[in-house]
Image 1 (cartoon, rainbow over the protein chains, first blue to last red):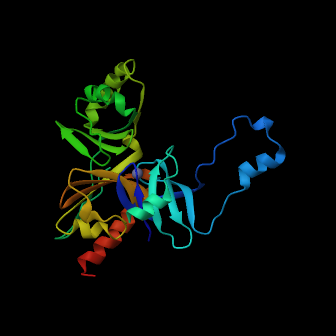
Image 2: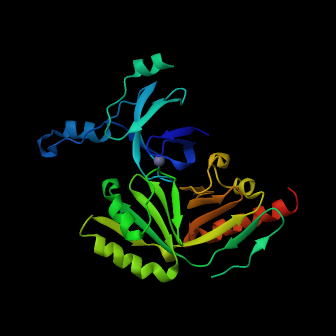
Image 3: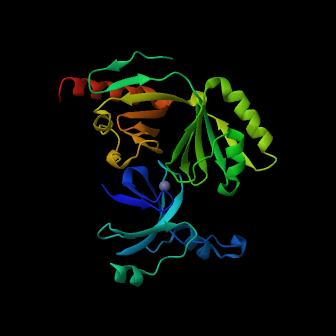
Length: 99
Length: 176
Ligand SMILES: [Zn+2]
């Protein structure tokens, strides 16, 4: 089982307490009616789906209830870090240098 | 409802009598208003609990608290919070009838809970509480002492959780 660190609880807890919630840092367009159909489709459905590092949303649904973001390697399933919702994506080179 | 106490030497399981339960959501900056209304300094760290004169509170999330008090005090508490609403907006929901509390006590209580609780309970300090899972049911787990826990479970999940505890108790009693 994966262990995930909740930045609000400041505790590392079993994956069972968490729910995955898709790619992070996707901002809703300020004025959707100005978008073309293609742009709206891209916002709704097109995701980066990388092989490797992925910034993604998780929710501590069976815990504090909060959404937060995580950087996870989609190949190894390793979590590099988690951070509160609304914070920018952390600089990966710094994280790796710190290890 | 008081189900019969079921126990053997190492673990006892009992459904506790009713209690006033309230769920509080308030901005942390306004917490002092809630503390004054409830008559207890509410904890600010998730997991932390405090208790005084029959009132108890645990912080479950960044802006969420679980409150316990004697049943007879419930109406007064709701009235006090209603009066405090002019000072600080908040939501106070009475959840007394939504849940049952099951007490699990005894020297092997921690080991017993591991049948369906995914947490590393050796890291859970007495006096703390957290929302978690018991098998597939969402519960609030309270640790009162090294050998004393409470599970707060929604009524609709109660038969499932209760059956699991029964099975585990029989397994423990016959030495499995
Ligand atoms: Zn959390």
